[in-house]
Image (cartoon, rainbow, N blue to C red; front, side, top):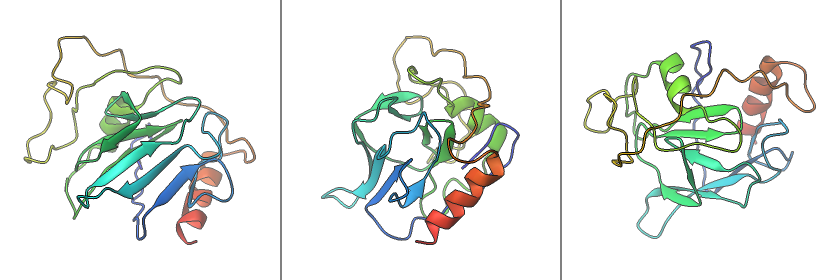
Amino acid sequence: MVTSDGTNRELAVAKLPLIVGRSVECKLRIPVDSVSRQHCELDENDDEELVIRDLKSSNGTYVNRERVKERELLPGDLVSIGPVVFVVRIDGHPKNIDPATAFKTGAVAVGGGAASMMDGVPTWSGQAGSGGGAGGGSSQAPKPAPPITAKPADDDSFESLLKNLRESDDK
């Protein structure tokens, strides 16, 4: 997980499937209003690839600033769920991440997003992104979302959000 101020926190996923959402029953809980009770799910598909699946969330699940229903995740992908941006790491790849740049590149304003550049996050090939993005189309990506200042729905600080993420990770 990366934040707008350049901090990051690694959240290991030990068991799949993993439901992400606002509900206390979710394995990974993000207690903010812009996240649905059961927002999305991480799981393996039949080919044993890591996939993310949107669970009909109100504000969408984004991979590299593209709204997705279901998508295979690759090392270096940026997953945006509400105000939180995650950098996908698989088997330790990518090794180096610039958290502030990854947040800026992956953050999506509630209700919108498009394919984006991957600056600051090494791709699977080990090369830092230089604006090509995963979309490959000629449409121009929107400006990155401003830093999120939303307060958690039932907590009053970002530190509380991190605490809830740590606690849900222990379940």
